[in-house]
Length: 152
Image 1: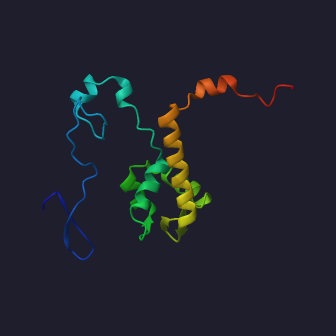
Image 2: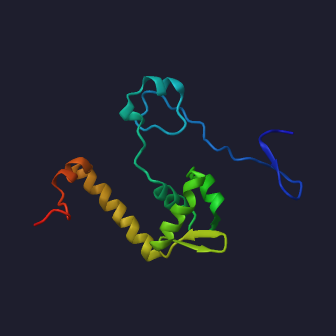
Image 3: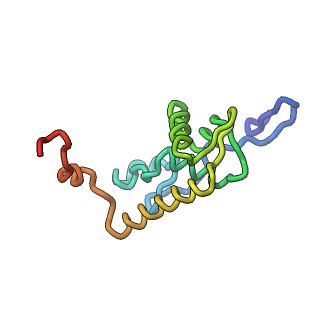
């Protein structure tokens, strides 16, 4: 049997969806996509290979937002977003607590439009501020932060 086919419960063969899309990542790419070729891994400076800053929650929200009229199981969301198996339930629960996604039975779906729109606006505002003023330096912020435990 063709390794790129999977047989369902009814005996019907269907093509499998590859976990990774083949990309032409090279050392000249401005944005690295996973996976990367070994030459890029070896020749790129470490700062070019850092995570894009996208969180697990961002990946889940982006996936659900591209399918607003569908609901998915936890494992379907995990597989589509590459969130680690040990993290997906926590991510989904936190997004649900914030009203960004809904949960019924074993299915999860995008939350109500108002909540999702507020989240999208916050993300866009943060990106715009970072583009204009630069990303926040956490160490610098902590250097000037007030310690609540110090007497006034």
